[in-house]
Amino acid sequence: MDKEKDVLRRQLLMRPQTTPEPEISRYMIRHLECYGKKMKIFCYCSTPAEPDTWEIINFCLANGFPLSVPFCKNDSSMKARCIQSREELTPGLFGILEPPKNAPIMRNPEIIIVPGLAFDRQGYRIGKGRGYYDRYLRYTWGVSIGLCFHDFLLPSIPRDGWDVPVDFVVTRNGLFESER
Image (cartoon, rainbow, N blue to C red):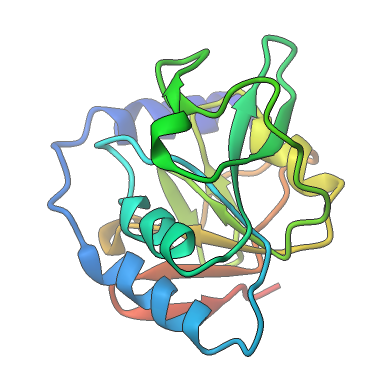
């Protein structure tokens, strides 16, 4: 299965730059506004090839949501480290913005916003192949939500035994519960 995933991953990485889909982050913000309390959020810091999360991050920071972002280590582990402002972020292990390594760890985030190159309707994803999110999701109880460009919500994605599906996928057309 690894070979199939690697071929798909290479195809997805070679795709032309996707047009921004601001509806994805706006949908997430509307979803967060519906809760009567400030949920603990763990959100990735997007790169240009991923659905933009900066509007979500700005919303959380401006509205008092406890917010954490990934801090990745060489051993393929990842921690949800809290931030109070975007100015705390600096390029990390893969050039992706990260919090300081001594930032407080967020325990038990309630919503985990997950990146992916593509997702399927069962909630499985193709990431960049390092397994950080599969390892993290295996040991957390929060609701996981994948953000996906509409054209990359696929009918099926090759999967291995260690792959962990997300609970929901958001595209510009709305939120889809994983069909597991």
